[in-house]
Length: 201
Image (cartoon, rainbow, N blue to C red; front, side):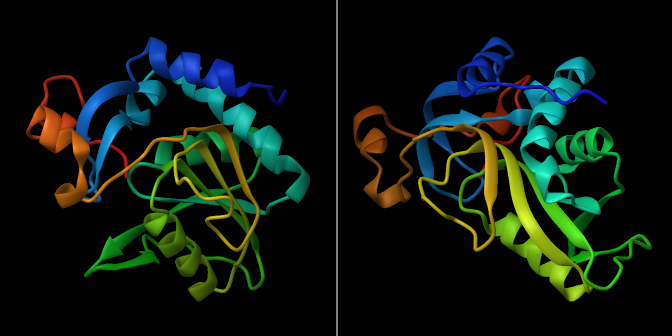
């Protein structure tokens, strides 16, 4: 399969065209406030667009020669599957039960299996780190992390290589420190709006 090149500018344009990147005053799922939110479900709802982004992210990860791709449910599942398809390797996902992220549904990893963890958006990195821990607990080895969007604000949010199509420098604040709350009042939760899903965190 042909892997695509997609620049940061092209990725941001795709997000804007489908309404996946919005500006305003938002409360993220982490509880933090932000002047923007990214909802990659709107980018990925069109299969041709999802395939294009998946191939572009796969191109960045291909040199690592992963044996499989794993994503945390739910947000990373679509893009993770597209990346795995582009790389020609199996795809699996982790999910939480009783607060613990793990592999379920009969998914197994070979001892030492090289896995790339793929997310849609990385902000705090919590779910990504939990998915990586699930890989290690299952006997695999995390070779890298990949994401469509990095909005972590950190140079190296993980202890493995991190590849992304777009880095967004967007501030986040705790509610009690949010200047937008003082200026514009209550933050919007995009998931409560018709036609929008929960904001990414």
